[in-house]
Image (spheres, helix red, strand yellow):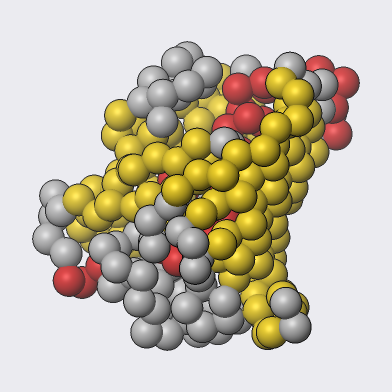
Length: 272
């Protein structure tokens, strides 16, 4: 159980929130440098619930090629009591344009139960090329030059791009496409808008939320298909509150545990 969850707590958070609308225009960012959002990952198998990992997302100011940029960072780790069973230390980072969120650079450096993986992307937008360096514990270093569309994201930049979406222009059931680079491949995925609803969290807080499902890539823990549900705050921040996915055995959740440095007031809270 622990193994599936600690893989999940980064994989699902990233996969779940990598849904964006057609086009790449960002009218206004709804987050700022200094924001920090945290999650607890939980695995469910029948009547058994296990808290096994934590994830944090950070936004910072930086420069890239001597120009202002935003540095988006996510780190995930297993709880210490599970380190002896399946230790996880994951880091994902992206550098993006400070107003359009167009990605410039991405790096993944992960350790999961002895398995190591590394990806580095450099976006060559003038050539529509993604320059990828990658290696894992069972695959040697390699470099790929992949053709990409104008609106191609990595898992980190896509999360923040998603938060700029205006969901009010969609109807229930609408599909919203995205192209995203994952590991050393590029996938055309989508989310499906499911409307608005109130959500009560485990600590009793009630949020007004926007709900959508996301198409997953079939792999070692996911079946593929639209087996992932996401609820984000129905306010100007659009912070993911809950992410839930079915996996090959059981289900997994990522639950919001903290928000600070937000750009806008959290007006979506109905009851604390």
